[in-house]
Image (cartoon, rainbow, N blue to C red; front, side):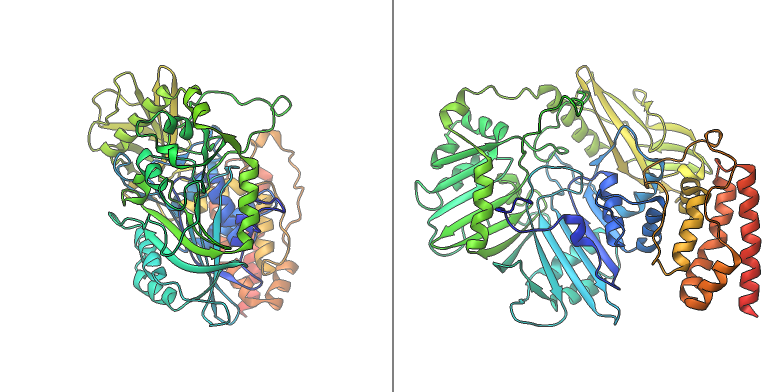
Length: 601
C-alpha cells in the first residue's frame, strides 16, 4: 500500500534487489500460484536489473538465468501456473526454477507466501531477508500485506532471534530438493532479525508441515477488541472469532461474496461482529474460492471504469489498550487454514501507533455493510466456474504426468486415464509453446510430435472445457530422459539474436557495469524477412576484448566461458539470422580466437 496514510513499505521487487557489491547466494520462495512474467521479474530483481515496470531486456534475462541457476527455487501448488494467451517462447526455460507440491487440493493446499533470500557481501558476509505475507507471485493489483524482516549475523540493538526460523528454512530447502537443508537451518538459527520500524517481532507461526495447526486462539492477556481482515471465510472460524474480545469491539473486513455467503449460513456466524466492511473479491488465481469464468473479454482501457479495490490481505489484530498484537501472513479466516489442513505461514508482531494509520486506511477504503443487507444481496453465480474447478482438482489428484522424450519427439504419459468430475468436460493438453491437443477418451498417452531443442521445456499446458467456459493452466512435470544441458543455450541464443549477444558479451567484459540495450525479455524475435540486411549495431572488436582483459581478467574469463558455446548455439538455433549475420558471427569467433591466443602468450 503506497498511500501516505497507510503502512510504510516498499515495492516487493525493489526489496529483493541486492545491495551494492552484493550477490544472491540463495533464494527460496513459497507461493500458492505464479505467473511466469512475475517469476522473470523476481529473477531480474535478484540481479538488480528490474526496471520500473518489473521487466528487463533480453540480455538482462539471459544474465539472470546464468547467475541464478541452482540458487533460486519457487515452490508452488501443483497445477497453479497461469498460462497467458500469449506466452513468450523464452519463458519455457523458467521451468528450472519451479518446484510443484503435489497436494490433493480437495484435502490440502500448499498456501504459504514466503521469500527467504541470502545475500553475500564483498567481504564474504551474509545478509538475509525474510518476507511473509499474503501476496502470490503474480501480477495481481489486489490489496495485499506482508512483513519484511532483515537478518544479520551480527547482534545489535533492537535485533532479536526468531525461534523456528531454522525449521522454516529447512522445510523450504527440502521442498526444493536441496541437500544442504540442515546447514541452512543452522545458519538461520544464528541470525539476528530487525522488524519494521514501529513493530516488535514476537514469534513465527509455522504451519508448513502436514497436520500442524496454527494457534488460532488470541494471544495471552486481555483483549479489548479484534479486527479480522480476510477475503475468504468459513462459518465455523468466523463464529468462533465472534466470541473473542469485548462485545461491540469486533470488526470483520472481507470480500462481498464471502460476507454474502456467511449471512446465509445457519448459526448466524456474523452476529458476533459489531462492524462489517466489504471489498471486491480478489482478482487472482483460485485461492480458496472458485475461479472467475474465463472467456470474458475485459473492457478496453478507454471504456473501462477504474477497477475497485479488491482485498487479498490476511491480518488478524488483537487490540489491548494502546498496543495491538497482529498476525500477518497467508492464512485466511477459515477452519481449513488454521486447523492444519493447509500449509500456511504467519508472523506475529506487536505494534503501536505505527499500525493504526494503516488499519485506518484499510477501513476507510472499505464499504460498511449490515447483516440484513447481506442476507438479501444476490449471491454471485459461480456454478459453472465451480464445476470447472472441481474437475481441475479431480484431475490433479488422479494424474502425475511424465513428459517422455525420444530425441526431439515428445509425448505426455499420464500413467492412468485422466479423470474429470463431469462427463461434459473435455481435457486438452500440449507442450508449453505448442498447440493444445484433445485427450482421447480412455487414452493414457498423448503424442506431441517433434519439438526443437530451443523450445523444449518441462512445462506442459492443459485446458478443461465445459459448456459454459474453460480453465487453462500450466504444470511443471518430470521429463524422461531429462532435457539436454544445452537446452538453455539453444533457447537463449535463438531468443536473443546477434545484436543482444554482442550487447551481452560487452556487458560481461565490462564487469556488468555498462548499460545494455535490446528489446524487452518477453518480446519474441521477428522473422528474418522483416529485418534489413545491414548490421545496425555496435560490434565487438579486438580492441574491446584486449581492453577488457587488461582492465579485469576475471570478467574476461567469465565472458570467455560463455563465448564459444553461445556462438555454436546461435549458428545452430538462430533461425532468424541472415547469411550476412552468420558471416559476421564467424568473423567475430575468429577475432575472439586471435585475442585468446595473444592473451595466452
